Structure formats: C-alpha cells, structure tokens
Amino acid sequence: MTVLQHDLYGGIQAELDASAAIFRDELRSDLPFVNELCEYVERYHGKRVRPAVLLLAGQAAGRLTPAHAVLAAVVEMVHIATLVHDDVLDDADTRRHLPTVCRLSGNEAAVLLGDVLFSHAYHLCSGLESQFAARQIGRTAVALCEGELLQVSNRGRFDLSEATYLEIILRKTASLIATSCLLGAHYAGADEGTVRRLATFGESLGIAFQIRDDLLDITGDAAEVGKTLGRDVEKGKLTLPLIHHLRAVDARERAATEALLSDTGDDRDARIVERLRETDSIAFAHDRVRVHVGTAIAQLDALPPSPARDTLRVMADFVASRTF
Image (cartoon, rainbow, N blue to C red; front, side, top):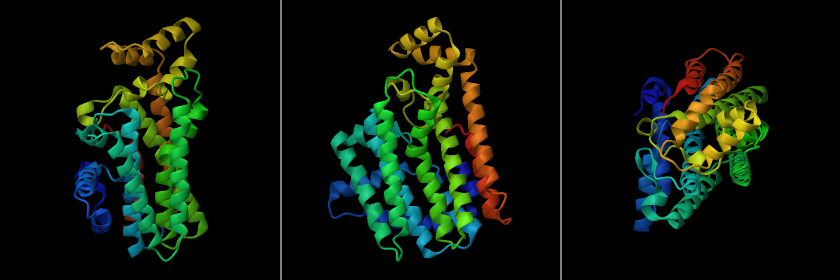
C-alpha cells in the first residue's frame, strides 16, 4: 500500500477491498495461461486513483451502494487494459517495477489480454440494473481509443500545438477519471448539477495528472516512478514541455532541438532537460498542472463539507507534486 492509499483511502477501504475481490473473481478463467496473465496484471494496481475517486465522489455526493464497488472494479479494469495496450505501443520494458506483459509474454498476448480486460468490464456493467454505466463506459472506451489514435497520427510532428496535445490527454487519460467521478456521483443519487461538477473535477484532475506524468517521463527517476521512462521522446510523442520549448526558441535553436530529439546518444535525455530548463518549459508545464488542479478543486466548493470532499481536495493537491 502506498503512502497515498494509507493516508487518504481509510474512509473507502472496505469498498476498495470489495472492488478488488470483484476484479479478481470476474477475471477468473478455466484456462491456466489466461489465469496466470490475469493474476499477473493484478500487480499493476498502483495508486488506484480511478476507483478511489469514484468511491469518494459517491460519498461526497450522497451515499455508496453495492453498485459502487462493481463500478470501481470496472474503471480499474478499463484503466489496466489501457496500460497493457500502452506498453505494447511504447515498447515498454517495465511497469510497476515489473516486466510488462508484452515483454513477458509477447505483443500478441498483451493485446489480447487488454481485450479480455475491456470485455470483462462491459460484462460487469451489464449485470447492473441500469445500463447507464455501460453506456458511459462504452463512450469512454471510444474516447480512450480515439485519443491514442490522435496521438499516433501526430507522432514525429514537431509542430504539434498545445491545443491538440490537450485534446489527446483529455481523451486518453482525463475521460476515464471524469467518468469515474460521474458514475460515483450518479449512482449515489446526486442531482445533475453535482454530477456535472464532479465530472469536471475528474476531467481537470485527469489533465493535471497526465501533464505531471509527461513531466516525470522527462525528469523522473525510473526507480521511483516504477516504469520505463523516456519513451515519449523515443516514440516521437511531443508533450507539453517540448511543445512550449519549440514555440519559445528561434529557428536555429528549434532545429538544434529537433536534431537532438532524433539523436540516440546516451546523454540525449539530459541534454533535452537542459534545453527545456533554459526556456523555463518545465516550469511552464508545472504551472499548467497547478492551473488544472485549481480548476478541479474549485468544483468541490459547492459540495457540503465531508471527509470525502476533503480527501478529493488533498488528492488533487497530491497530483501537482507527485514523484511516482
């Protein structure tokens, strides 16, 4: 259990444990190889942000029901499915300090395992009385895939705009966190305005979370972050610090940075960080994180005081400074 979970998840620990049991039971297969892979990806549980915000949004907006534990398992399945697929796309070696599924069992097995996780998520949703969750998860899965496709179509483009970058992360990361908050509030019986505010909280939190993640890919410590770093540059994916830097420099410096991005030298990453610091591009990205965190926190002001609301606020503050 991470410090984040120990300090903040006490009020929802029983529901998190229930969702973990649902997750495990749903993925049980009569095929030993499938079982082994499903048991392996259980180790991909990290900060459990998506199930946590779903449950906390439910508590902050009303009361938790048995459906909430099911939905917490659903959003975690969808999230882990995207991680498994992302590692294939990024040719990543490690995840949560472990070999990735694609490195362990090959790309074919990893792609199919991701599909298994998505399918089980829809199966869980279909067991609820209302189909509201199934429709929301379906729409979110489309957004996730569209975000990845948009990113793939812009690989290697040094003229990528900040607006397009934000559209990518809105779809591929923020959409699922927003949906988690929306489902938590909706199934707690919240009114439409409260549901909308909590969905906006999740969206803003998700944008901040991904910008911070992209910063860690450039400046983080692989041992602390627990996954392969530097893949964004290697795969030609421009993130916010680089977008800002390329916009800030003159044509000669821009050409020099573009040449560096195509370099494969051992010191490339350090040289990139040095260039980004010269244009305050890392600080710029940090500022953007704080802006989106502020937008998220502002959505909580209209909610009645509660430990759950306070925890959501602390989680948002944590995103701005996390190092893992």
